[in-house]
Picture 1 (cartoon, rainbow, N blue to C red):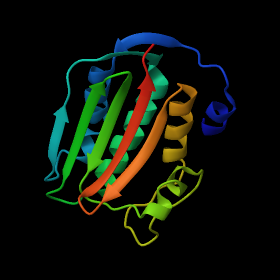
Picture 2 (cartoon, helix red, strand yellow):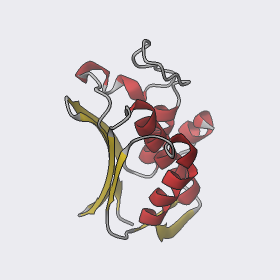
Picture 3 (cartoon, rainbow, N blue to C red):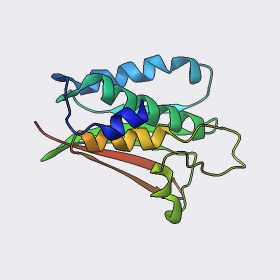
Picture 4 (cartoon, rainbow, N blue to C red):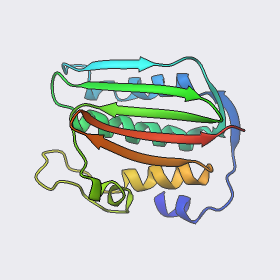
Length: 159
C-alpha cells in the first residue's frame, strides 16, 4: 500500500466531503483503543468540507489518531483542531510524548522506529504513509514537540 502510494504521481478519486465528520468517525473506529482509558479528548472544530481522496485521507487520520492514543498515558489529553485560512489545517496533539528535534524528520522515514524502549511497538510505516498521502494531495505534514506534548499538523490546499 505504501509503495503504491509512493509511486503514484496523479491523485485520483477526488470527492468533496465533510472532513470534520471523517475525523470524528476515525475516533469511533478506534474506540476499542480508548473506551476503557482515562483520557481527555477535545475535538474543537467547526464543520469543514474538503476535496480529496476520502479513503486515503481516512488512513492519515487513523494513523495519526492511533499514534496519539499509543503515546498518551492514562490521564493524558488528545486534542484535534481544524482551521481554514488559505489552507485547511488539521492539528492532532497528544500530551504523552516528546519527540526530540533530531527525530522530527526521521519519524517520517519508512521503517523508522522511535524510542526502542517504548512499550508500544509498530512497523514503522504509519508516518511514512501519512507523509506520502498528504504530499500526494499537495499538502504538508510536520511534527512539533515540547515538554507539553507532541502535535502533528497536516495542511492541505483548498480545492
